[in-house]
Length: 105
Image (tube, rainbow, N blue to C red; front, side, top):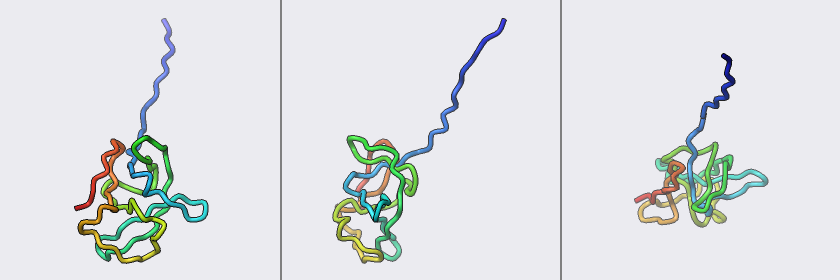
């Protein structure tokens, strides 16, 4: 007896989910503004978008769970701009692809 078997191994990477409002562009590059908690400043970080979903954007490269991204007012961000985290609802923590972005408190 002989048999043919097809198998596929899932090598899925964990995607990070961010609000659509956090997505920005510099030239032709998709970016997000991340917060450096130590210096209380923002920095542009290039990202690779995996997909758009009803609850936000799935990021394939450039972010990891726990990174803090600016979710509102991205058009006003500049490199090394000072920000204040306490009570700022415009900042959200990137989360796993389940779409549960958590507000930084």
